[in-house]
Image (tube, rainbow, N blue to C red; front, side, top):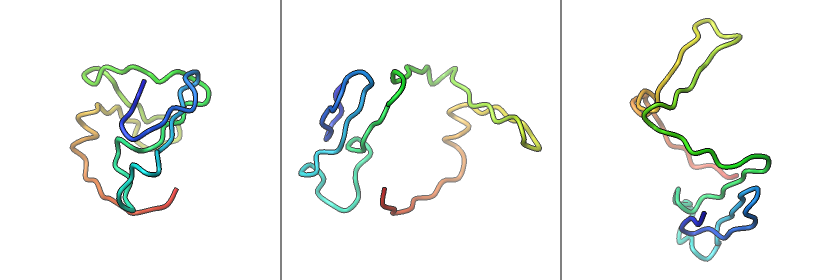
Length: 81
């Protein structure tokens, strides 16, 4: 699995990091952000059937689709990782 702007560190588990010379600003583009999968394979998900279940110690358990999440309000923050 090759990603734009990334260099592969290992295939199993899959780990890649940003090629520093490929980032032209202080903001790293999403396609150049690092990937860490230390203990499992990268899952292949069907966006039409995937669901996130929020349950347990919550007042109102809920199940959300990817489309539900995409339609929620969002914000952007500049942070350092």
